[in-house]
Length: 404
Image (tube, rainbow, N blue to C red; front, side, top):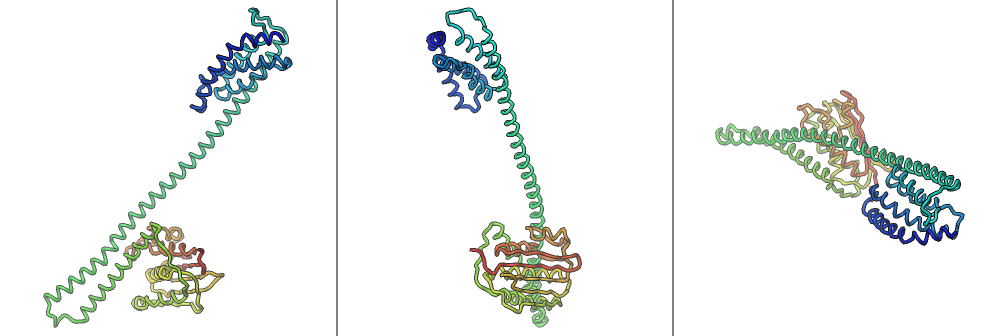
């Protein structure tokens, strides 16, 4: 008991100064950098070791049966965790020398003579400390490996996502460029046609006798101009609607309407065109189907589908059916035209996509995209069923009551 009191009395000032100074450096570095550098950890360990030795001296003065080696394990594990296994081994050696030199021998005895108990206890301490440090270092390395594997997986997923987005962006840019080329051609065609007709009329009025300039010829020119103006107006409206949809500024003005009546009204607008194309439309809409819809947008979607049926229908009859099915308005549009291939069916509702690329079919090719967006805005869906050269069927389903 006396030797512990001697050790604590004579060594307390020296170890306390070292411990306090190095402990201050450790905590300052700990909060500035995470984790602290191994050099600072090893250096600061001596301060911790000194502070632990002082505490051990006082504790053992009252609890002589308690082994001082146990008090040094936390500091050894601390160094191992932040600096690694090798610095941990160095701290084990320093701890062993500190315990043996400071606690087990009188301070005034310069000779170190090991007893068997001290040797056994020291050996057990070294083995326990080494094994504990090894397990702790292995656990930390495994945690680091797991952390980096997780980070690697996240980075791999991020790279794959970026590559996919890049590919989609490239495809969309290509499709947009194709669309712009088609749009410029389609917009130029009616303007050129109208300009030629107006120039022809002016030429006849100026240079040909009015007696030879019949009313029939003038009427024919005006009808041609009207037709091209209507075509140009439709394309401009399509571009405006495309802009509204793309920028998210399309708003619905919902009101209670009979969608069966809307189909009939829109179909009446195609009477003259159907006669000119020698085509017929059969409408099965006997019962009213009343719901909350945007009248203008729904009429536009129906117009687009009927226009497509006339354009690609090869003069075959067109069938339209409207029914109420489980609180949903269901509209069927069927034609017997050129049809749509399976590959094209996957893309026809996308922006800047066309079902056909032939120049004989006029238009911007955005009608189905606009129709699909209008249907989605009403919380509905549109599907297509088609086979090449066997016609196409479009089905629209719209809830009669819209979610607020």
